[in-house]
Image 1 (cartoon, one colour):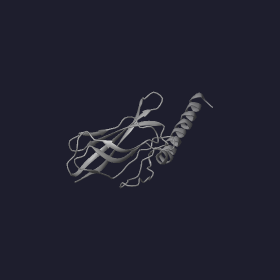
Image 2 (cartoon, rainbow, N blue to C red):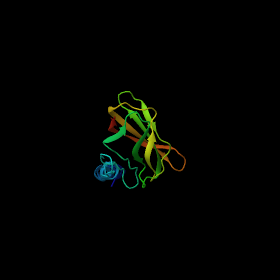
Image 3 (cartoon, rainbow, N blue to C red):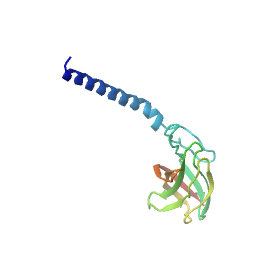
Image 4 (spheres, rainbow, N blue to C red):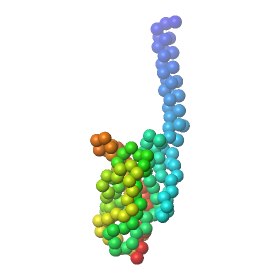
Length: 157
């Protein structure tokens, strides 16, 4: 067997191995890293919580958040799931104006907020809003990945 033939076989084996790894990740990796898991929260209309696998970051999600009009101290249930190995900072913005109406301090894994202070009171109505999840390393506060979840903010009179 010649040297060129050995190199050719080596390239075929390397290419086949790379293709096999790509196909395995496409099937298995999707289920582990991208497929959402359902976790419902009592007291709110909940959507599935996205999970990036057992070693990833779980992002809570919900469809609606209902608060009283004209108040700055409002009830909620924002939380950082206990299994996460990172801090969260949560920021809520109104989609139409881009105004930030709430931003948390660092939330430790397992920590929940049941009442938050809005930047200003809101008039009654229904608003499209987004909660921005920023994740930070517990070791050195380095920024990790984040997520944005859209929901309906219902402000009741």
